[in-house]
Image (cartoon, rainbow, N blue to C red; front, top):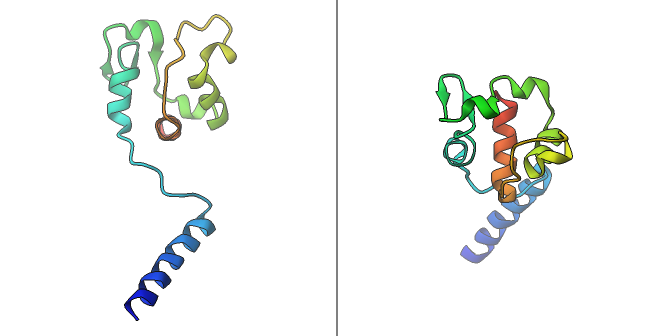
Length: 106
């Protein structure tokens, strides 16, 4: 009986994930990601890196760009902005998805 209850619970969880359309994403500390990969050349509000004048503020970027553009730009900046000075940084798929979502909220 216990086995059947456990299997039913697993089936329910799996079906709810399929209905939601995605598997649970790994938890990404977006602020730590920003601090590690972006802050040196960018700012958000008063939180600026030492070369923030080079990359500029990220405030309001979510109202200027959509998710597809941000993802493509973060993967390869020169694919969206010819002559972009930002280097192509490496992100896991989870980091990229979380960071795009975060940028859209700015």
